[in-house]
Image (cartoon, rainbow, N blue to C red; front, side):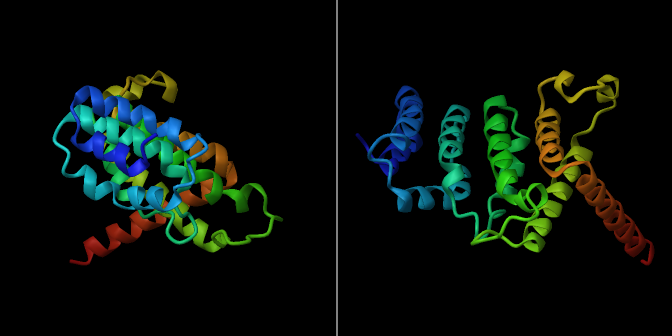
Length: 211
C-alpha cells in the first residue's frame, strides 16, 4: 500500500482517473494498520493551501480538498487551531458543491474541541486551549463567517425560512456551518458573539466617521 505522500503526489500529478482513485485511497490508508504516518499527515495539512493554489483543474481541486478533509481532524489543534481558516473560508465560496461540503466539514470538526469549555465547563483543560483562547478563535470564526454572508447575500434568500431549504450555494454552506456553531455553542453564548459582532461593527463605523 502506498504512503500518504505518494497518494497525494498522484492526486496532484496523475490523470483524472488515477487522481480520483488516489483520493479515495487516502481514507482506506488512514484506517489501515499502516496509518501511523502522523508526520506525513501534519506536513500535508500544513502545506495544503500552498499546494492548492497551484492546482488548475476543477476535478483535481475537488480530489485534493476531499483527501485533505479526510485527514484534517489529525492536525495539531493545540498550537494554532485556526491556521487554515482563511483557506477554508476561500473554499466555502467555491462553485463546486463537493469542495464546499468538505470545507464545511473541516470547520465543523474544529467546533467540538473549541466548545468543550462551553458544553463541559467543569472539565479540566489538559493540553487543550484555555477557554479564553478558544473564545477568541470562536469569535474570529463567527466574524469571518458573517462577513462572508454579508458579501454573498441576495434578496432572493428572503423567502427561505429554513437553512435546509436554501438552494445549494456558498451562502447555504456558510449558513450550515453557523447552524452547527449555534448547536455546539448554545443560545446564550451565541447571543454574546452577536453582541460582540455588533459592537465591532459600531466601532468600525465610528472610526470611519472620524475621517
